[in-house]
Image 1 (cartoon, rainbow, N blue to C red):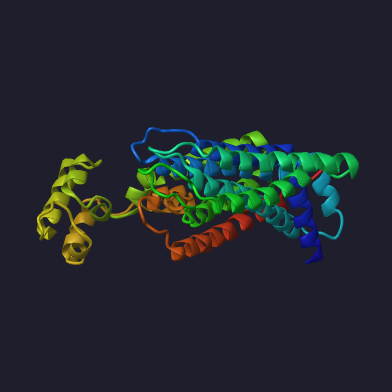
Image 2 (cartoon, one colour):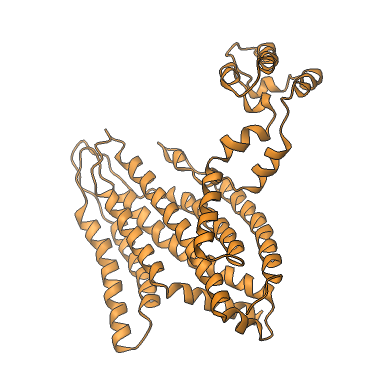
Length: 380
């Protein structure tokens, strides 16, 4: 257990000392607050546009950081021989990989925290149709980051400490203080402008995005046991794009056609033969009690066994290959809930809990695959 903690802590500190991590964290957080100070001429929907843009920035930066960090944490150590030096001591490969991933996950947690703080600040100072940019809050936040760099430079010059890791620590502290100050400020707008407060719903939204980071970091760790950073980045990018389109590419084939295409319109535009369309349309018309040209959830319960058998014989059942691929490839859309932030909708914490449970199960499989891949590799 002591070896595991040591490897995890060393991996965490090593990643914090990477200049690219500091640049990603500070540039993305400043950019998020800058987005809130920009007019969009959105006819009153400017705060919604700000939140969508900030969450998209958080997602893209985190995904890129996860792949870069995983590659530098494992692939570089294998290439330079550091991993062989560690494993020559009484340290098992399983402990080595699990410790590396724990350090990587801790780094992503720090990145998500700072970006989530900037997202909360952006929701507070977002530009509105009748208001103006909150320059005071913008300069308070950016000033806190500049102060963090300044103090880190001081400790580096006078105390001979590592600049990047100290800068990350000071950014975490000073941005938190800046957020507390900005959150307590009252925004004085015009008579037409509604009071804008911190949108705390961004916290569960950010935690779900963190789930996506953890999964992609696991995928990158598996690839890093065999590949260098460029192939790892390429594979993870392909898996990310496929996961974004998995509902369209695989999801509709992983369900029976009468579930994936429950309306007459979807049947006619679906990829079916004329005979299959005829069978599906007939069953929809048979079950459509309220005559809205689709099968509702309560109407689906009236589907008879012989009708299901008829549609299966017509080749309308779920496809095995699609079910397997749809299960194996992460569906990133499950972690993107920006649409739920409209109006007064709330993000249920039960959904966040189920998402973390899904991530835990998925990561268990990824770690097992990474251990098998790493265990069979010869180090030199």
